[in-house]
Length: 165
Image (cartoon, rainbow, N blue to C red; front, side, top):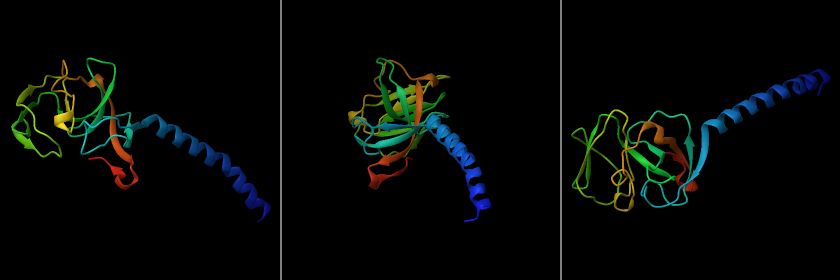
């Protein structure tokens, strides 16, 4: 290798390290790892699944989020079913949002309930409705400030790796 080419490579190496460092810092500030604990999100997520969660989020219906439960200082992983202003009805094993049935991959049946969400209220439910302590039983509906992270991508188990829908 010529000396001039070697100098060129050595000169660009610090720039490469700087770019790599900035990208790594940006990624670690916007993405965190999460290990699922419990069965409330089955069949979508299972105990010990490992997922990425994003820190900068805009809540969207049917997304999976990490939220603060109202009564206790713990985090929960639940699906966003109701947005501000929605009327959510749980009836005969189905979920209706503003009168339209939504298609869900959920397990179990549950009692009939109706939720009328206010201006800054969100309804979160577990996909395993028969074994989920969620918005149906919490003392209040959650506010935007209670939504911490958006769970976006499963890393483990390896045969289920991929984006969460």
